[in-house]
Length: 142
Image 1 (cartoon, rainbow, N blue to C red):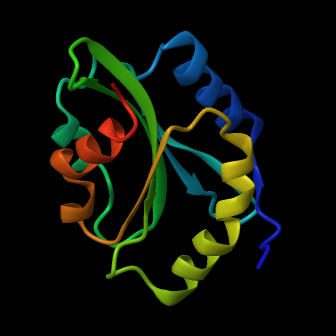
Image 2: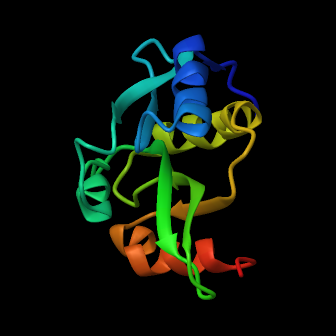
């Protein structure tokens, strides 16, 4: 189900900055008010946010979003690792139309985000808990 919503050049540039430049810790994407583009809702550098849970608190309770987070963790074999995590945030309390719009626009965004290592689909805050994302990030890491 394609919605005709396209990914803005600003969103692609922001993703490249997090992927290649490591200039940001996370990006939150949303659909603009006219429902024509996926735009950057929030983007902050690693110096502006210290804890993963502070990032999770930015996800709205009743509105869908996508987020890319540069997840840093200690690998089981030792050593620091980073993986780009795509979070598809569709809370249970969101309206049916926004849920459908985000579901139908998901593939368009996903095609623009090469290099995503982990995907998390979440309907409530428990599904984006640090421990859950950590377990997914550690899969396949030595």
